[in-house]
Image (cartoon, rainbow over all chains, first blue to last red; front, side):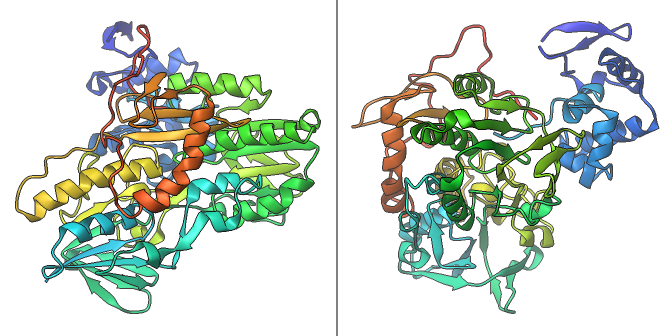
Length: 104
Length: 421
């Protein structure tokens, strides 16, 4: 897996730029990742990102959008406003997690 | 007397009781299967009902005729599983104790979960074809449709038989051409995915096939509601797609009793180990077929292959041995492409559908990810196989685990199944 430099530090990413080592992530890196896709993070963004990180830590997989809405209590409409057009991918990207597993 | 209780007498449940009744001595094991009705349906056949290729009688049989002697069949609604007490409660008040439980209650389209879907346009200009009633209603409505905008729409993944909406679009294109009205119809394919399908190489092939047929694709569309007055679907990010005829795949969800029993995720799918299909919460509970949360296609082929692995494992388990089989997520699907042709895809958790040739005893190899007449005939022949070989639990000459034989992996593309949302 390639190594790239974001926020002045080396991080492991896959071919699409998603972090492959969730442990390399911290909130400062999250801010830098968000900037890469043109997002400036506010409290509402952080609520979603922190839910993603906590849920991943306990369940070992990136929550789907539906889970962020149902278990994280953030309406889908808000997620589309905060992370426009592709909220599931953008959220995972900023939170330093793999893309959620959309089943085949 | 030991008790094996199977909830759901569909594809997975019927296969399990047929296979295990032969292997478990009647003097030692009671097997019971619970279902709400006596109607077993060949669901892949729903695709052909709207176009008049299949008639209603070709896709149904009485469930009890497929359940072997020595298996008790209970017709009832399930209230909940009380896993701590190894008991299933039925809505009529009966309680069924078990030593081992198999949950095989599948997944169900839930139009009620999208605001407006069940509005006044439901089954007037808004249809589903994932239910027997929906497919039949569409069969009545389709002949009157000869111009305007036909929208084929997926609400949210996962859905059962994830290729079926594509097949519907291909067949609709072919059917409209045959009637000479294709140029009067705008055909639109609306999906929550970023491309035509979940897996990259197949998505490329299938996307190109949509393009060839001039079927417009609207990707990344998460529906918020159906607007019945304007006859349109509206996404969470305020995109609006008008329709004259909407063929939608509603949200698919596992059974509500799974949620009431505290065994399910957000979509009521039972959380299991993806290799053994055993519940992550209860060691004597398994979930097979569409009812589980394994990251594989919700499809009859997956039910079939996983049942093969489960049955061997289960016999080891009750013998006090470790379970040695591990399911790999193997799926194998014919994809109708219209004009009497079809494709075949074969894949698993780790390997995405690849081009090549699929070796098949007697019949000969079938083209993978390639439109051929043989694949179409294979799909049609499968209906007989389903009723006469698969459900009765007779052996099919197909390996349960996926094989790379005949597959061609492009050098510069990863073969690994990439997850998509």
